[in-house]
Image (cartoon, rainbow, N blue to C red; front, side, top):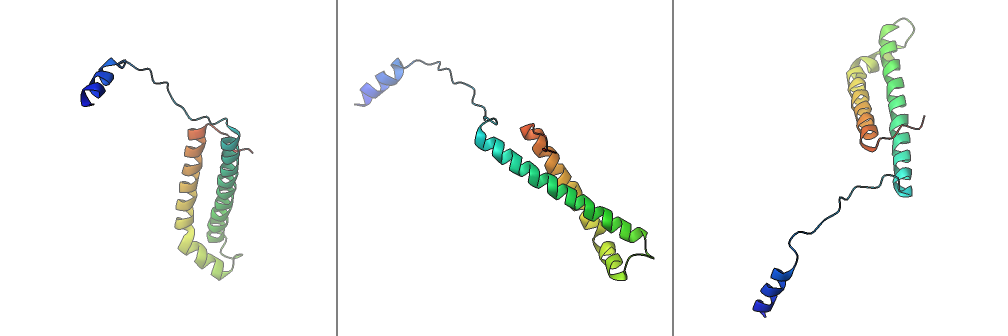
Length: 104
């Protein structure tokens, strides 16, 4: 039995061509996922950028903005800026990976 298996393995061709397998990003499901993810990332980035503008503006206009908003902006402006930068980086990497515009 073992001798038969060794002879069978020896008779198989040694060089087998394996085709290159690439993901198909044009499949209907993948296009839908890319669209939904890009809209979510784009909307989140616009919202975070708006929050960053409000936080910086509330620090700049001290006579108009209430004290509570100034204290919130003073405590969280660095966190909001870092979150906006990270979200922008994720959005850019996603767009680069799937070669997809953000639908706007």
